[in-house]
Length: 126
Image (cartoon, rainbow, N blue to C red; front, side):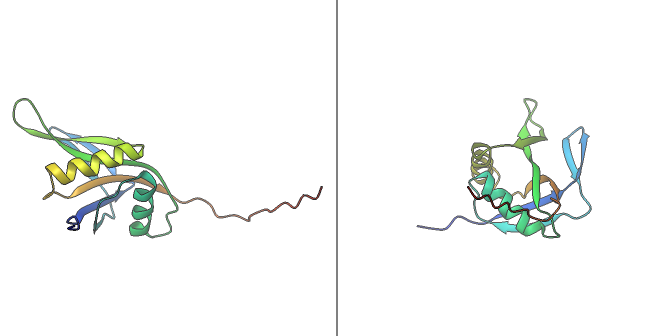
């Protein structure tokens, strides 16, 4: 069985979203571009994104995908679709692979750092 062709993914961490006549656009100071095969779950998506973002980010708060949609008048616009579940991830990657394989998958990723504090272990004896 053939391996699927890797998808080109661009992450726009903590980007500003601009709405224009042709849809939404992401403006990020530090976009990250990489290739990856299919991602099928939300936890896998978060793990892959955190790995490629590096820089001490420890949590993904929100993930948005810039989807190219054809309008009734024949033109195309970019819509922002928020991903919340495994089903959203599966549909997004499946549709992109079938319909827009030659395009970059463009994601808005709201990321943050969880403060690392002391772990307090309690020892309860009964």
